[in-house]
Image (cartoon, rainbow, N blue to C red; front, side, top):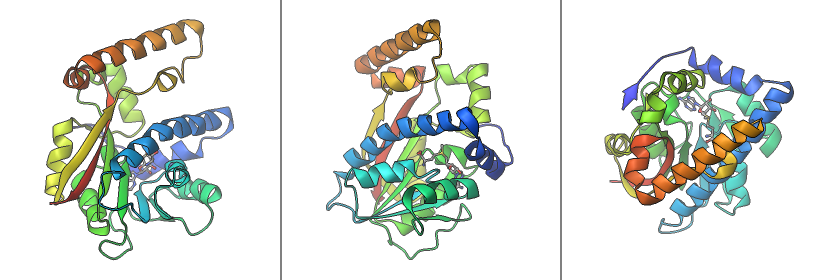
Length: 250
Ligand SMILES: C[S@@+](CC[C@H](N)C(=O)[O-])C[C@H]1O[C@@H](n2cnc3c(N)ncnc32)[C@H](O)[C@@H]1O
């Protein structure tokens, strides 16, 4: 696990969620598109639980779009979200109604042990300077936890341009799969099931605004999918895939 950079963290997220105009709308659509795959991952992993989760809580739920999609897919019948960004809480509340998403300090969840059947930490741990305490706190509050992160300990994400991009969006760590196993163990969890995803074509092409950019994006998506099909390990060493696991108490 490689840690890089640092920024006034909360401000980074307030700014990201406050973008207005066409840029803000576009990023909203981007988050919604990415949330489709994330929701699918959580649903697939949750199928491995002894019984379907009733209370599902997302820690670091951002604008609430993933929480909405999980609810829409029938996962759980009570949904809660926790977020550090005031602006994100406000967007999520517009989306999900009052009393669903609450602001918290990023360290302590205001609930009893095992209050949630399933806790979800999706694309959050790479944003947290010391991720294990937040994972441990989520594990305390949950009977099981789904963790999803981008695996960025790879050649493509090491390039200077990619590094600048990662820092701009607040990624402080470049995880590999083993890092997540180690962090789960440190938080008193074991990985019961896992999956990875080289991401669909529509994600790769989302920001391709010209014909040339679209051709490059399609080529990249096809090559990446091909490498991934041949060897997940080779893919993880070469470029970023999304990784999700179901972690349960040891
Ligand atoms: C990339 S977004 C992910 C949002 C959502 N979970 C998803 O997967 O679509 C990262 C989120 O983590 C939140 N975050 C950053 N540090 C956090 C912390 N210590 N505790 C909880 N959330 C945090 C940010 O405010 C931001 O909303």
